[in-house]
Amino acid sequence: SASLGRTASITAYRIVQEALTNVIKHAGHVATRVEVTLAGQVLDLRVTNAAPSAPPGDPGPGGHGLDGIRRRAGLFGGAVFAGPVPGGGYALRATLRLGESP
Image 1 (spheres, one colour):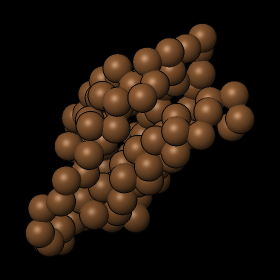
Image 2: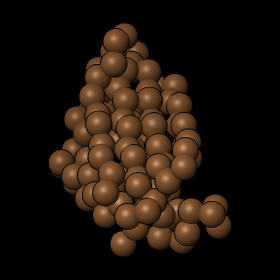
Image 3: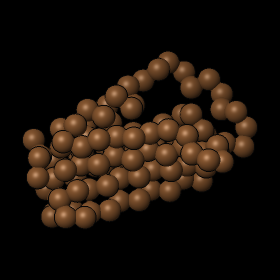
């Protein structure tokens, strides 16, 4: 969106992209919801997935998914919260404070 600015738009896109990659890598093809909310100068990104129907296979070598998401959010004075949710799913929430853009 033009109102976010190019850097914030790309950062938000990359955070959601990495979160979705993590869903596929760790839970497989499960129902997943992406919510994007802009309230004042705070962009809130949420990715929540259902529990896998079977234990996922070996995800392969470890990546830098959550660390990368945290670094990106940190560029905007934001924070990342990630963890399991009731029912066996997983949720990630990242906030970007747009007034603190790099």
